[in-house]
Length: 103
Image (cartoon, rainbow, N blue to C red; front, top):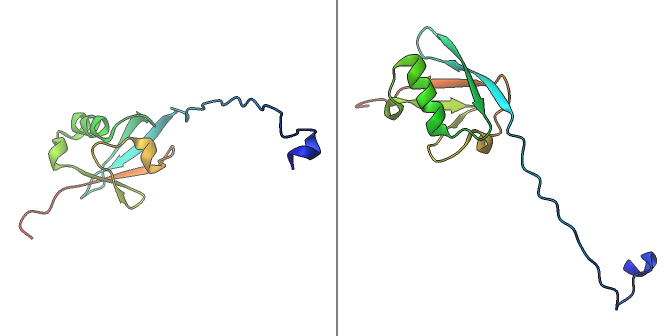
């Protein structure tokens, strides 16, 4: 209890809070394309948006972001989120797939 620390009812307690930002570390990732499994190294940050990552993929593969489906650890990466939202770590694999048309 507080009384065991010599703090009585009339004592004012001042708290100091420290805001700690999550690390914005660089995450070297490997993008795996479908088919022959061609691999590309990508350098992203935890704060990189999925949209930014899809633009990086476009630069490497010429596949427009709207035609990309990117998965990591069984989760589809959604536009509007950042890489840190998915708990992605250095060396994880990103799997690129394409939407299925007509079936």
